[in-house]
Length: 79
Image (cartoon, rainbow, N blue to C red; front, side, top):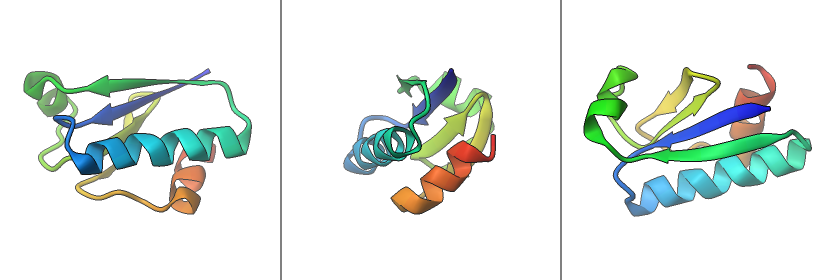
């Protein structure tokens, strides 16, 4: 099961990233769980300075922007 984490304070871009990640994971047919990380100290623990950020199985895949669903599928499939 993949662990997908959305790092951000809950802004509109963070919500969009969560929706993109969910859509990408469903399209790939993988088992996954999504966790929204909103605490600044936890976000900084990943070394992320710009949100939103997508983390898959503990690895930061993208920060500071919302990828397309196709990009997210590639990020999820490659980890």
